[in-house]
Amino acid sequence: MDFSFLDQLWVARFPLLKGLGVSISISLSSIVVGTVLGVFVGLALTYGVRPLKWLVRGYTDFIRGTPVLVLVLASYYVLGTVGINLGPFQAGVLALAVFCSSHVGELVRGALQSIPKGQTEAAKAIGLTFPQTFAYVLGPQALRQALPAWVNTAAEMVKASTLLSIIGVAELLLRTQEVISRTFMSLEFYFFAGFLYFVINYGIERFGRYVERKTAVPS
Image (cartoon, rainbow, N blue to C red; front, top):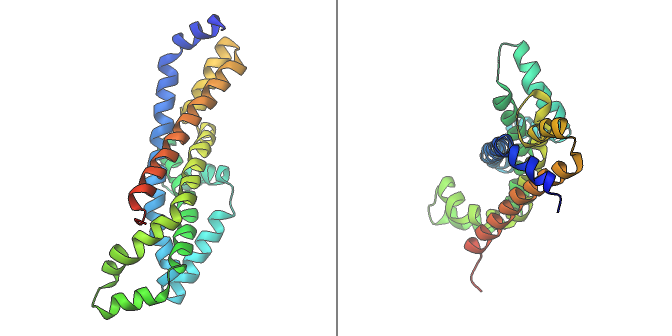
């Protein structure tokens, strides 16, 4: 074991922990906001009136076809030119949340369209409103179907958070690069940063499996 790396790791523990905290905060914020927005996008794509469907379809296709890095730069630099000045953290969360919403919207649309229409008609027949039908009939089934793909999308958001260093967000990768510039131990610290990203994504994967077990239909 390279004890000089351990010594440098101990010296750099606080900057790396702060970077890890920023990465987790940005990832969770963008996943939560993106998921909520994505549910509305999916509902609009599935049940919206035709003009709304066209509008949301255009939004989804445009965002899905745009690189995340371009969204990050646009949210930080372009919005500033029209008077919307966001800090690096807020701009990063906005960019990742918008990107996440387009993917979650497609997941929700696909899951809802796979549910037989007879179930919606049956819910109407017994007097349920649409919010009640979604909450008690459609939502739980769509959640089970979309959950595995949602876990993948959430993991992608964690990896995409490394792009935010370009606008000055002091997340884990930027902190790691700062430590490397001082210690010249690139291989060791990049490997360590990769391990931390793996731990975050492993936690998301375990959370997904927990929700999957809780929402599974008893056999």
